[in-house]
Image (tube, rainbow, N blue to C red; front, side, top):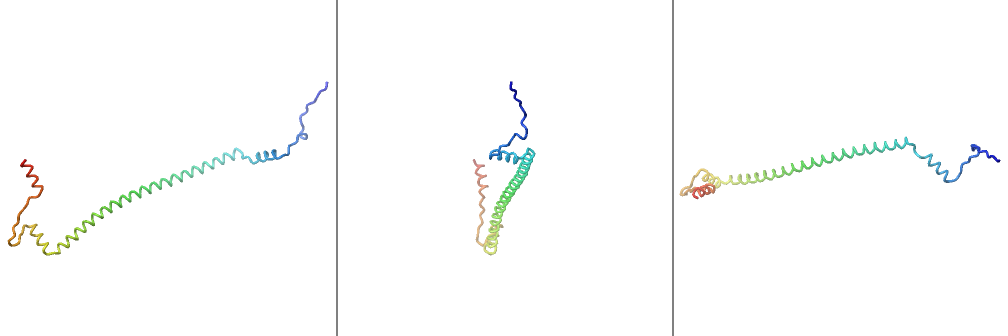
Length: 141
């Protein structure tokens, strides 16, 4: 019987293939990042995302506060402009009244009206106001 001896291949007997595929596979294995490098990259990305989100949140909150302040100031401006219009109307009325008070005839007429004075030959009649007339009509009914 013929006995075959199985011998372990010696290192000298094993040869590497030398083709493009084997070389590219070896290069990929050498260039492949280790688990530690992958973890470091993930941590860097997470840190960057956390910092970016904090910055975005703070900027957006500052923007909202500025919009609120702007709205409040615009409301205050509208109120002040309305008040200014009223004051200007009062000022125009007072200027007109000053102009009238410079006229002697107007002053005399005003004094006669307020103090029930009359010129010679003039009669004064008092007429009840509308409120007094309405009150009397309700009593009559």
